Structures are given as C-alpha cells and as structure tokens.
Image (cartoon, rainbow, N blue to C red):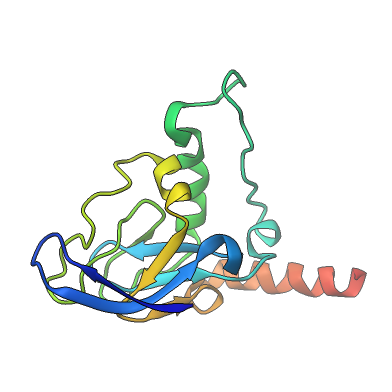
Length: 156
C-alpha cells in the first residue's frame, strides 16, 4: 500500500488515497456503483468455500470469449454474495473507481466492459475507505462460508 494521487477526469480535482497492487496483495477489488468505496476481497478461501471457481480458458477453448468476457458470469456469481454498499450502490467487478469529490468516474470507463482491462490494471485505488469482504457477505453466504471454513481447518 502506498500513497497515490490522481486527477479526476470529470471534475478535474486532484484526489489522494492509497493504492494496493492486487497481484502482490493477493486480493481482488470491487468498486461501488454509486460512491467511491471499494470492497476488498482478501479471504483466500472465500470463493472455494462458496463453490465458485475461476475459468482458466485460452483462445480456442470452448466457451472462451474475446477480452475475457467468459469471466462475466463468474463475476456475477461473486457479486451476488455481497450485500449492497451502505450508500445503496452495488459492488461490481467491472465498476471503475469513482471520485470522492464529484462522484464521477475518476479515470473514466477504463474497463470498457472488457474484463481483460480490469485484470491488466493490476491495482485498486482506495480514496474513501474500503469494505471488508467477510463483513459484507449476505447472511446465507456468511453461514455457508463459516461452516466450510470450520471443516477446512479441521482437515488441515
């Protein structure tokens, strides 16, 4: 995590915050659709506990789609496990970061509905606070995750 500043493409204001490299931090990030909050997925076992698996498809494989769009149904499954943001917005993989001052799209629509662009971005810019993945789980998924986590820990 390092301090970072960016100029908002909408209002022109300079915005400061913390930047996390997703690969080095071994986490995923989902931005809110309405405000600048971000949900940080840090629990390495969460998706496996809930039966959600990533697709590792290459060009030519059945189901592969250009720009990584074959991942969109997986993203939808992941997004569904979380409660809405306190502002009423929804945490989504493909949401770009929002400015905490205007709340327009801070860097524009940099993902353009192309998951490959999000994965190549490689970092998350936290300007107005983050939300914990386990605390944001819908109750039914929190129970399922806790139960599978207990089983996993007993078997370790």
